[in-house]
Length: 408
Image (cartoon, rainbow, N blue to C red; front, side, top):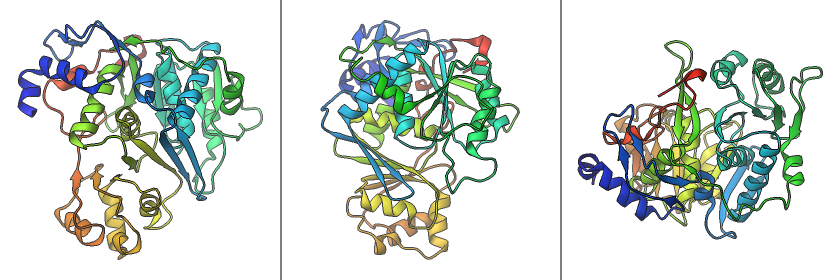
């Protein structure tokens, strides 16, 4: 399969598109125009909507569980999540956001961030996110070149936040973004007095105002290469570089990784330790297109059992972690398999740093014996998490707005 996908990649991606059974229209031929990685265009005559592809299916099926540090849960069926994304998309359009515009988010790993990303994608705008623990200069180094129209922000301070209060960080970032038309609060927090630089709206209010206005029974289909996500290089060799990823290429690459590499499908629950500032957040979001239920966690790492408790309590089937957390548990002598019922867990994924050979032994002995531990790789540039065959990276479209400093 790997050799076939490289040597006959046009045929591979056409067959994979047909097999994936995603909603689209137009023509699957030509599959790719051009052979140079930097300029090749995949499926130029095909149209789809990323949000629709993630939300198609039975409306009563559970698709999202957001876990909070206080033990509470927000649960969404596909119908509820689709309705919220559709209503917010309508509100964004009323605020002047259109296809090709940029939307930024300073967000926690919760359901509100998912709704914001899906609504942005639904109207053909581009979504960029970071976590609220970043400094204002770091946020602006990423967002300022995009000149976003709307900024989503979490405004409620949490007990585990460190340093400058999060509301002040959001206000500082907003002040440095030229042309910002609106700030949308993802929670019930407030901006510091006198710091508001653009009209403030609340997500909860926008969802109510648009209630019944648009159920998205007909989703607007965009070009396969319509920009979807803007991600950023680490900034270790200068200012962070913007990297733009197209909707169709992102979707098909993620569906390939989820279904073929991870064997994810209906009935699975995927929980990945991530924040909105890491590409694994975008990666796990796309798992909705494979019928997977997402489990999110918004809170601190308080003890070695923090994440394992969620895995057991939510009956997670595929758990994404990192070597540092596994080492943390090992150093404290914590044995998750002896404390929790992990019978629902069938696979663990690890990325972010090197997974040492001894950690495979630790997982087999202290977590679950008959369970594969997969060290996955990838990164921001290909916006994928597993080994990507040569040629596939050419799905990443060239920048739509080179004047904004977007690079490939």
